[in-house]
Image 1 (cartoon, rainbow over the protein chains, first blue to last red):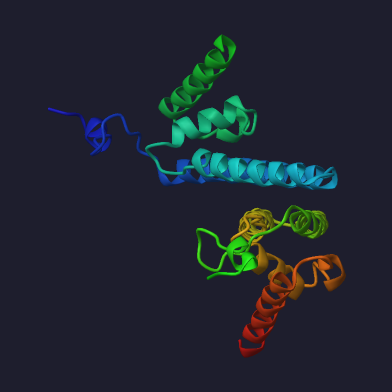
Image 2 (tube, rainbow over the protein chains, first blue to last red):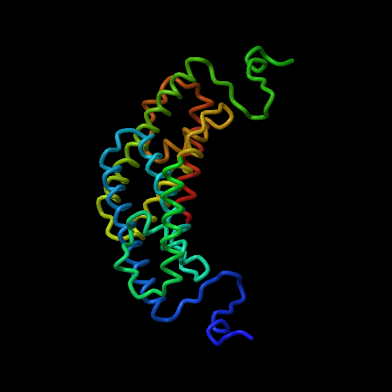
Length: 127
Length: 127
């Protein structure tokens, strides 16, 4: 017979962690700060690239760059509970979120987040 | 029996004018100057828009603007002989080409070009 805590952890999707309200608030804060920082970077990149435009090919390079960055950001910042440990793991790996900001998450989440960050670091090293 | 000049004007596509080598050179010069001027405008617009970016929505507005301008320019600058009188007519209507630059084209071309410019002006007035 399952213990109460095991019952509480039961979820329709396999391996999908449950995020409590306070954990979601912590994740949301870190997530939003990382997104705001990344958007700020794209704005700075764009101003710099635009300033350096000399010919039409530079113009279409900027367009392509913006399209790629938009798609990359859309893909990366996915707040669904089923994706959130991987998303935070990537942000941790990229240095957009730090351990401090994740304080208050349960150990299972922290473990998954760090594990994904480590996986990405190893993948990058191997490439 | 057709006269020699009528024979010379025969062409596989109905109503498609024949452009002589010298006419093509005149058209090419006017076309290239208009395109260069329009690209220069887009570069200036882009630098101005980029300078004024304050938030991410301004960023994606710039991306959309660049995509639209690129498609518009791709569509507009079509140098095929079958399209050229309409293309030059539009550039004349938009003030990107002037009558002076078209000097040396045969009267049938000039008539078609002016007629298309007039049509666009009337269409714009009616809108």
